[in-house]
Length: 228
Image (cartoon, rainbow, N blue to C red):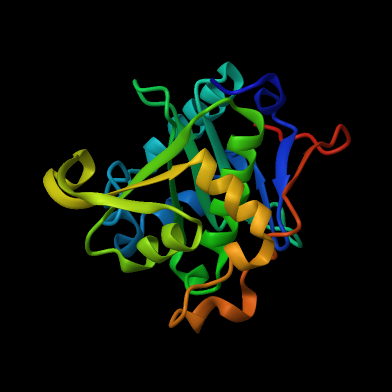
């Protein structure tokens, strides 16, 4: 599903404050420390808690292999000023319907700063720009209002609640389904900043919200490889 451009480990996306790049083996400690936090893991379907240290490097290898084969696009979220310091991850995975699903997490020290919204909008723009897809879908636990706000600010519309299997949580849990159609995304981009600002009453991230009129830059920096 994903094009040749994304299949090289020098691929990265740039937003106003973030680099989204391939994960590296050097990220293992940061992933173990942050994804293994109970507050992070319990909101996901697949991150175990506690996180087994021996599982981190196989996870990174699988993410890199899937990127190289074009099976998915899994990216480390890092500050532009410190691109070696992973603060979370974001990715897109194809579904049987041909519509990709996105997911993301951030370490708790980086919550409430608008990073998840900025990373999500960067990935959304890239998917619609590079891949011929009609929509993007995702879901979130009903007890995760912060993730819901990220999706709503990025143009997703709710499509109802359902019970979803969360393997790492050990059962079925109430979740909300969201969808962003290409036509909605295109309209938001045409509207410019007015389509991508924070919603009323969500001023906790307003001071560092992304600048949507500056699209993420897709770059292949030949002088800056991402070693495994």
